[in-house]
Image 1 (cartoon, rainbow, N blue to C red):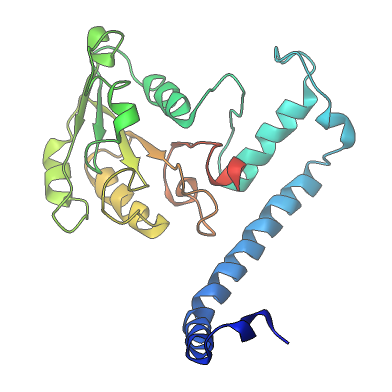
Image 2: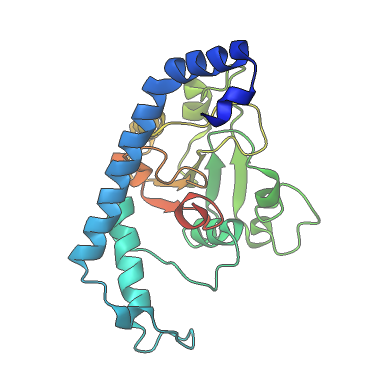
Length: 238
């Protein structure tokens, strides 16, 4: 006897039909999970992760081999040259702010090409709030290019907005609190191609929150220079 037997036969039939309809998509997700899991486990093996790396530390980093290995694994798995994975970052917004502001100096501009960044980042970047401590106080400009009505990047507007003052081009992969679709890695690769056609040497930053492991490639593998995310999301929260 199945647990489903207590339900109406029509409902049981409907469930089976829906299961059959979504089976191909579930199979793709399962394959993606296995590929990413293999990537992570292989990196653990290559870096010879041992029990001694899991001991606690003071947080100062002196002789903290576990932290060094953890960051090496993150860099390896996400396609980067190096990584910072620290409890000193209290949130993804904190990590993103540090990454962005670490790339600019007075007189530089940060330009988001995926529309206005999500709410929690707007105060950090001086797009909302009282502006105290915002980049603008230090002569750093922050701007954004609106998306097209269909949620796509406006390539022509992006090309028109970029100039010699643009030091960082930022891409928000997730929809945040908007209704648009999140961007795929292939779409990000296309954005990067457009940006590089105008400014070959500009820093390209990707806010990858919610994006880690959602595909088998990451933005750093298609030309992004710097990436940050949140351990509340895929990489830490499952």
